[in-house]
Length: 77
Image 1 (cartoon, rainbow, N blue to C red):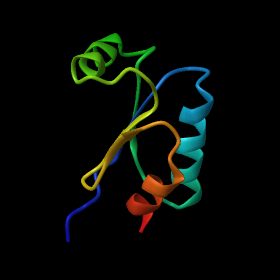
Image 2: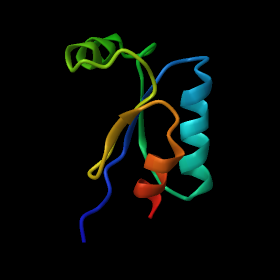
Image 3: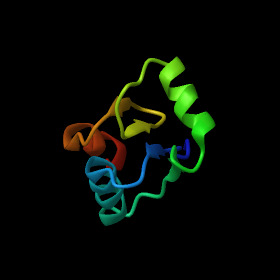
Image 4: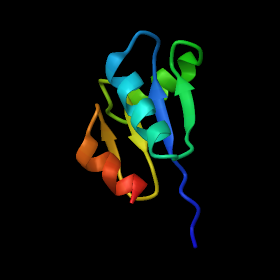
């Protein structure tokens, strides 16, 4: 069985970031959070990958931006 690796790129005062993290917590899913306000190099990396908004959620199954319950359900399934 492959362990799920989930990373949430977020920033301070981002409502959609908070909603994604709450969804994952409520479903008992552990994740790694990288706050771009605290790690500016992560911000540059995301921009270089073409991401222009937050949150960015990366997992083994999917990668997406924003609060997307439909995509989050794929992760918690």
